[in-house]
Length: 257
Image (cartoon, rainbow, N blue to C red):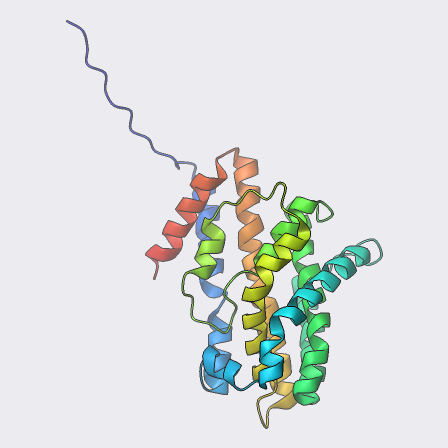
């Protein structure tokens, strides 16, 4: 009598080390926005009301300003890699915090002038994290992955799923131009940076607010970058499908909410 085949039970993740690393990435992701939301609560209002505080010409021109700043930052961060070695996270946070204090001291004009410098520092920090995880920041693919980090929701917004979308979506970047990637990222990042500018220009807070905002932004994007590239490295080292690991990571993040 022929035996009936027993359906195979598929258990995609049984490696204890992989599960531990996924849990660590989920914890880092969940903690990324905490200080930012506390800062926003302290300043008062919401992300939307912060944007409304900006002068109309600046608010309407943010996307163009952001696009140009990203282009400049990409070139400057790339050139600096051959001259200045990557710095630890704490030092990058200290540098951007000092820039935020200087910009905030001068009010909104100072914060706007400081913006391209902060974007360059953030991008350079993200590139350093990519290199730390074994990826080449000079390659076009990794440059675009670094730019994609800026497509996340931002530290001053409640997570509406945008960040999880960044983590969960597996995008093939081959053939995409750098200019095309900047065009995709700039609209989202411009809204986030508008919140940053308005928070830095908060009355009576000046340099203190500028320092706090930049510290929050740098910490946030560093955490998002570590989750993003940590997942990619885990997939490579464990020789597992990256999409499968992404699904498991998102499940762990949402399960804890």
